[in-house]
Length: 251
Ligand code: 13P
Image (tube, rainbow, N blue to C red; front, side, top):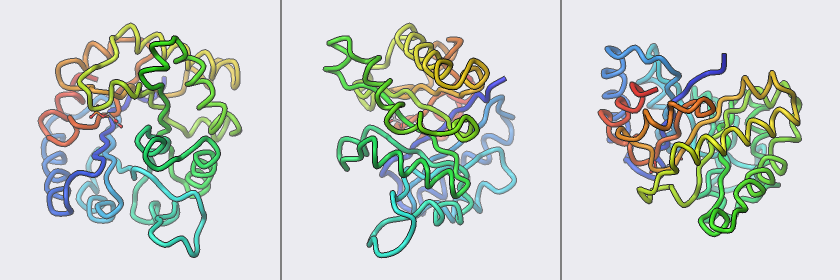
């Protein structure tokens, strides 16, 4: 049975004090809830070490939102996978469409980041997804396939098994335009079929595939009811503890 998961991606929101307060609120709220799925919060780099202390002993696991594509050295302003891991974070979100679009992260850069994350014992949450024009011209499957082939299908089956995938149609991110449950299920099933072709049915069955893009407390249950949708990667709705907890309860 593959892991079900609800993961938050705070993006560039919350100063340190606000982030610590939100983490504390989540720890308290989830104490009573006993979630039936893995719970991960993805925070900016500066929060990681502090939030790691706050969530100790709770069900919450920690993710960074990025890591460098270089191991160490003279790369001013960058944060390496090893540094991320040393904070206590266990996961690293990689390949987010905002990183691809605004920071020009292509398949080659992302392949390096995935390798460095794995080398440093960080589990990648690897994001893929098409933009609006690609969906409108029916190219979503080929786009997602190329993203997988470009950055993660080079891995051994053992390493691929450490990856969580997140299908995030770019047109649905922060827009309020959620993919329909059918669109999400179709794409997740397609992704799983690609994994089966590459690594075999067992690996495909064991891979956690999250949906992301305007997922909220209202639509989560409907999305998660699909057999190939194993949970969500949540942006806006992860910034408020009651909303995030309601999504966790829907999983
Ligand atoms: P929203 O939930 O705000 O649409 O963001 C989704 C996302 O990008 C998560 O990584």
